[in-house]
Length: 134
Image (cartoon, rainbow, N blue to C red; front, top):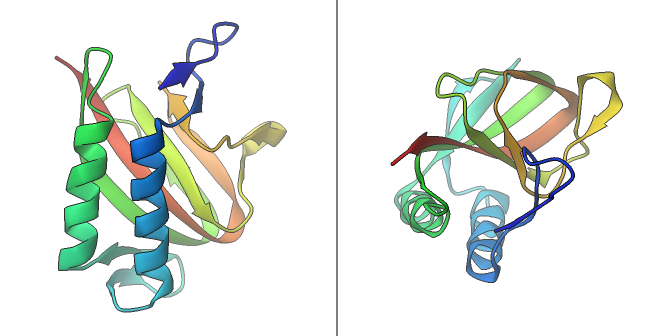
């Protein structure tokens, strides 16, 4: 994963294998065959056997640079939300919809953060993955 040297907390892009996995995840949730667990008024998590396999693949592909990726979620947020960051290291990958962070901070195609983030946008789909030092 290429890292932006001027801002070490932001990754510029995913590795090619991970990009392909993200595209498969996007396709799976677009087919509307996944379960939706949560509240229709605020948002939900997507789940299915096929999605779980792709999430495991993505977690393995992003377990690099001294970090292990885990606790990966694919979410739909109706009107944005606050993304908790209990581990202090998290990757946020936008899938569908237009999203940004509070204070007009852009959400990049692969965003690494060490803090709690407020995401703005309506009807957005995201992958959120925690990281821990190994």
